Length: 476
Image 1 (cartoon, rainbow, N blue to C red):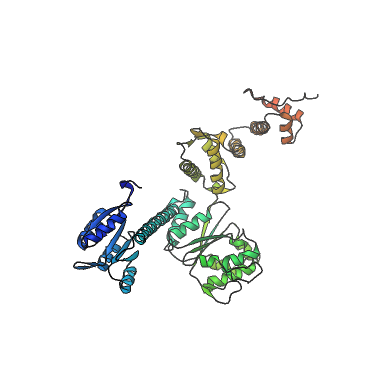
Image 2 (spheres, helix red, strand yellow):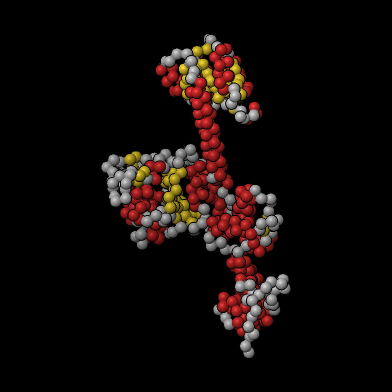
């Protein structure tokens, strides 16, 4: 049994004291009971105490219970109201349900039915609140101002999202793989009037040609060999909401033609069907391919291109958003800290410099993965250092730094080449636990040449006592 502090509170509004007493006896073991003998007292108690559920008599002195129901529903849509009556009037029940009553019970009550109806109404209320909370979180998560970046390119994206989100205009999002095109699509949806409606995402490149049409438009039972039941397509699922077509440039010519018809007519027919189905769907498309070039080559329909490219949003690659890199890195790190409930951890100065210099060929998606790896490797550490980052990042960053120093006249070419060679050899030795034969094989040179370069560059064995496999003597 729940403690009094944890109990749900039920308000009984009934002018008959014996009815209130009976209801209290049945419900009190599980709920905290509040009572009112008339409409005015009931409304005052409701406003003051904010109960979780109301049991309301239809017939009250001087006031119609349905009028009280209307007032309760106007003041709190989330609080369920169960109507009570001594009559079995079907019309009263229907009127009450139309006004928003959660359920209806007739006197005298069946004790078990009363408990079931109250439990069910409170469970539905809890579910409705959870759904509302989750929707609010989703809206907040994809709000355009929560997209990470302060660069000029991202500021332009924010402004365009704000301008076009609350319209049904088709939007084409372009940019390299991993730049966050689906995140922008969700920002468009959750900042529009369709935010409470479905957001359906379909990766056109992830499905074979034989399945893409069925996935988009659905099929009727028996329309082809494996069609053992009717299937509802993504267009139907997204009705009144948004359909995000990722990698739209991968659609075949036949599917492009059918998609164009849906965009023009706003209706389609399931595979094997005869009835046209009308839909109200906003299309947001995305691609990392050059659609204009594909149109010139005859690989993408020109009329479809102009139909989807009403508004165009280009997402710049991360390497062109240098000032956003520290912001994104800290965002992904904070996200992991929150998820894992770990103590505060931050990036060391050198680690941030490595992240900033790295060219990020996989863009934001690659960064999120790398920050997750660094987070895992940095267990029990107060900082993420260079050692927690993948070797390839440090090599690429070091190479970029050496190039910049050489071109700026801060370092001679000979010195830069030696430094770069030293970094590569040290990396190979670390990967092979300083077994020179294996390191030489990894570098594609002889062990003799490796030993010569190590001596020239002043690279010796580590002095940390780690065990290495004994090396055979170098033959002169």
